[in-house]
Image 1: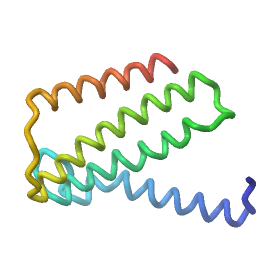
Image 2 (image 1 turned 180 degrees about the horizontal axis):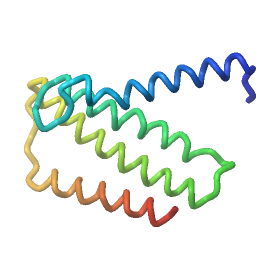
Image 3 (image 1 turned 60 degrees about the horizontal axis):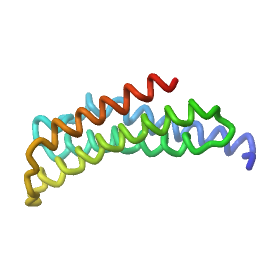
Image 4 (image 1 turned 60 degrees about the vertical axis):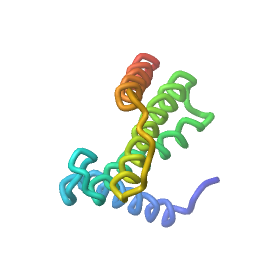
Amino acid sequence: MTLAPGIRRRWLTVAAVVWTGLAVLPWISSFGPLNGDREGVFAAFLVTAVPGLLILAASRRRELLGRLRQALALLAFSMLLTAGGNSLRLLSALGVALPAVPGLDFTTTLVIWALGLAALIRL
């Protein structure tokens, strides 16, 4: 499907504004899951979930080379696993009682790093 030039420019403008907003989000909010702020944890979730979903969608494009598609998929899964951890932190910051699984942080961190390394190797 091809878009009209005006629609394409509008879409690129909206995408650029969204990406810029995500890029500056850590500096305009109390960012990060470490401080436990709801807004900061939500910002960390958005910064990992939105690009993860977009990269996963990009990995489905058939016109890309196979290794690039695999690398994008691995990177997307790594980012979405990080977003999953951030969503659990967000639920905890909102006061939802969650069961504690020993070693979950270490294991997920190891898997995230392994997926990222595998993505770099596939490139």
